[in-house]
Image (cartoon, rainbow, N blue to C red; front, side, top):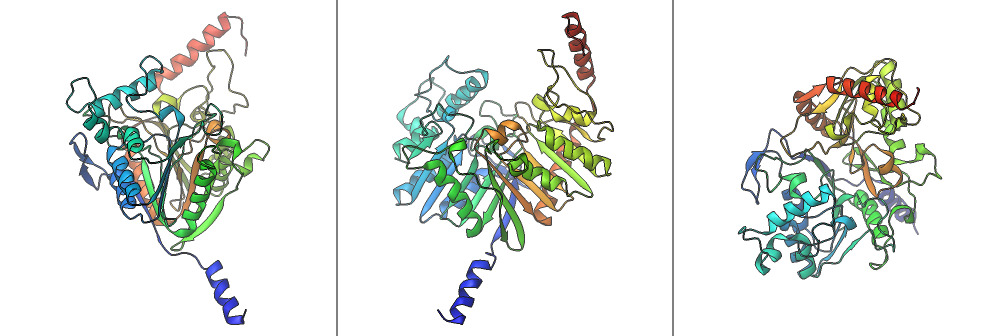
Length: 447
């Protein structure tokens, strides 16, 4: 090989792959659209259209790994591409790998019962209480994939009962473009509940990365899950990989997948990656999270708080002030569990944070974001909640994007949510803490 050939080879190995990185928000106040199912015109980016646009470009392959897929237009687009000879494959969480005809009533918990009711309402277009062939083949996404012979597996394909959650939310097209989302591919996560016209969808975001360098990493994760199509590799059956960093149009993107075995150091896990970037903060850390319960991330944040870094944390109200929530640490308080014990290694801050609380969202919706913005320069997002379960048990995605433009968009989304948030410790929480302490003391527990 000549010196010129060696130089050329070196260039292709080391040169960054140019492309683009774009962020979308289904509550973006600067955009609007009319959803295709309820006919509701509302503010926001149409995240389903982002998916459809990427699918329409496919010529070779479409790999989808998402906890739940219920969007008929997405299913229709995938079936069309399959019929055109594109290699289309889908990986789901087993709890959602069912059609309206195969899920039995009375077998599910309250959350699953609500999901089934929504699915029935979506499929039953004429509201006659029955499901015609036309309705099933135009509205039941999983049924549509089955009829269209799109290969679908779930996390029981590793010969288990589906340990943990297959919680990914990403799609790779032609090994060139990747969509990473905090949203499941459902009406409730993107547009709004089919049975609730007031719902505008759980607040979520989506990032499109047009770069082969990133797509290769996501394809590797997908193919590990897929295995041979009959026996997949989920959870700890996958090969551990630490964070992998690519450069896209001058922006660094670090990518890592959960779960991490506890045989590795916590610092080598995805939550450890989150903490490593938080530790670099010199000005601010602002986050909007569905669940926040990792003690070690809280400990790193306390150090940033002591250093004068401006912190802001908004957490979905269902989980914000549970006994395991690290929002309690930030508030400088602790709460007993119903079993009269404190969370292990609990560490309420001596100097509480100044900005924390719960958002007010549209009726029926929940804050589903999983993002943090550091110094208005770096964004952390993906499917991963900041919890031990996400870190050690579930199949999850996290990306860290070091780009001022993208960070600015996420900072604006944080401020939008903050405007309708209730900050500080709720009076009802203080009463609950007192009630638990009194009740536990009455049962002979001492603290």
